[in-house]
Image (cartoon, rainbow, N blue to C red; front, top):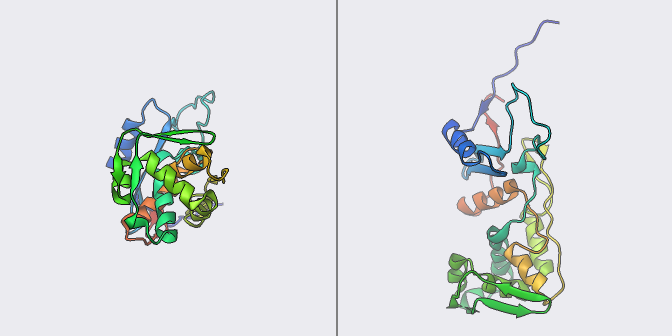
Length: 223
């Protein structure tokens, strides 16, 4: 039958940011995704390695056809400290009165938490600014891994989300033995933590938007 004209779709992608992201990831494995926090408009979404849909794809490259922004899961590292901090703000009334002392090492059953610096005594604000592993390791032990896991689930970091109706890969945040180095590393974004770049983007955008999460979208207007 004769083709039927569809409706126009306007993408929120910023071509300059998209091109910049593709140049930054050229020859590398990774993902870059950026958003306008107040509107949910996705400005840039780059997954690398990628391929030219008009050419031949090198099928020997692992994960070539996966959008790593939404379907790849990675160890989050220190950005996960935001989840731990949110859990602490909600569950520790005296958080702003506490002092966290960093001597670069935190010896615990099962191993040692190592920090990148020697920060000494610090408030929670200073510990976040320093991205202090020792402070957030202590905080993780104080909260307990179940509290952090539940917070991660509620924030959408653990579990699956959607982008314009398409499901993302599911993040995985697991509990660890109480008082162990594994439990400390859990709150630092290590241990067995796995998240999608998209889920952490959504959380950070909500923080930037004053605590209100806006549903991200690639398309808007005329849809």
